Length: 404
Image (cartoon, rainbow, N blue to C red; front, side):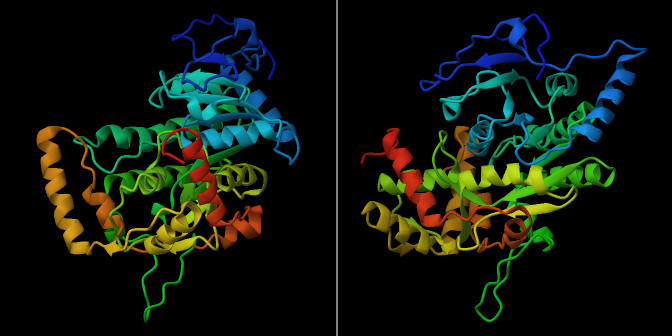
């Protein structure tokens, strides 16, 4: 990205160059104003006319080609998928401008050289400014909560924030815009004579399956992405299933299952099922979507061999770790009652429930999916799910989340 001088101050400028050592969560800012990379405007009759000329030029000559260096904008770069995506982009020689909230935990980005743009998804002007000069936009950021006192901020982030990001990417002339949705926006399979057939991207989601505010907000956000694609924006939608693997700093709910298992804090389990996929395959799937994806289409980023019940999952973890898997299965009715009680207490204590009702409702289904379209059209990698769990276990142990 060409350089342009700009005043740069810590905590105020949207752009900071981050060095490679953030292993202790410490931000390393070593950029001068001259290092900030923006495409300069041409001085013609109006800024808007200049923008349109730049956009048309990029669309004619700057379409993404496999192997070509790209300037990439990534929201949610500090998250589990986002950090792995930044790592994969840099490994392929692409430049990355990472959009993160102020004071974000950047440990997942340890060892990566990237440019940091700090801000909020509610600021479309700053988003557009940060996106200038970028070829690809990956909108990974999302607010994920299964219980909140007030869900309005989650809708604002997931729905309005998505509109702001995609519109800014379109106005900035990004040749590919990849929106990260969720398999929660795809219809769930139902047993037929005891057999469950994994669903694909064509399966409509039912109103009953929109069982929580997170799913509803992501569904509305996906409709925004589809509308943008229908209006001509180069938007591709990806729907990750349940990622596991290294770099789950927070950890995510799926990562917490592994950590709790390692700490022997899982005395029982619910009879649910998930499609497990290596997080690095998900990250690579985003890049493949930018390279090969068709605008307006959506692609499940999952694993064809990853549809496991929770019992199967725990037995695999037992095989990897030597820790005995829990044998007691909690009946759904008991879990449902316990979740109601837990949420009632949460409203008095103001502490999130350990077992939100939304999570229990989701666990009622076998969330099995078929990623054949992404494998066929994108070349999505298929790392064995057991390897994904092994990599996750090793990472959690190496970073002190659980004893070896």
